[in-house]
Length: 269
Image (cartoon, rainbow, N blue to C red; front, side, top):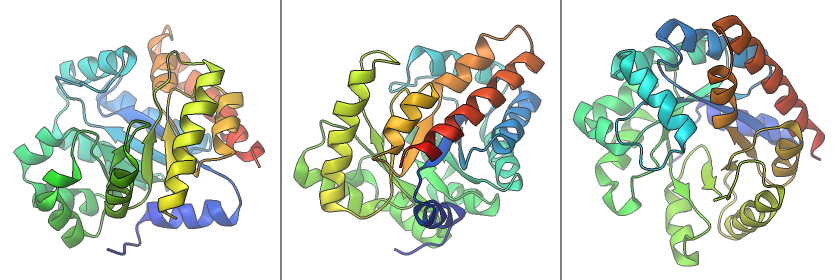
């Protein structure tokens, strides 16, 4: 399927500039509904290329403690599908490519076709579905085809070679390479796991590859941007907000981190 979303256009642009894209993750409704919108504005102004809006879920099996705590707070703030789409729309209005990251359950509950169309209607480029396998994707594939949005699947270092071909074949926008890393900031973990996975992906696909793995500073962003098309940062932004004494300080910390990471991706090649 061929699409021409803002995300597709972004990777054409960053490839022409010979650099990786910087992608930030923020859960909808965190630290509050209004606060989330301010974080989105701050990220866009500070040089982030794309934003992933997290759909807070009560049983986030694949998220670490930082994101889990943020999701819990977002749910306590009454975040549901309406707030997720509002945050998505707000991000696209800032002129950045934006996607939603969600487990399959909320999509199924809302209706796959309706969910995909709502993404498109709110200016979104696509959806990252970390727990959806391609074998169970028939309904979702039909929905994204109709709405012309990007279906983004996640691959890991444990994904077998023949499966990489099948999964990447179904990906749109970019391939999400999740590299398992022991501790955030363990430098050796970044190069080995992620680099090897990206190299394996390059053999089977020419689609953009974005890496999410606990990048938290300019040096790590630079390291990953040397071999990946996109660098995804989530926990570090959330932590900056959680550690701040008030909203204003949190936004300042987010702006500083985003501008440092933006420099990192631009220094890589």
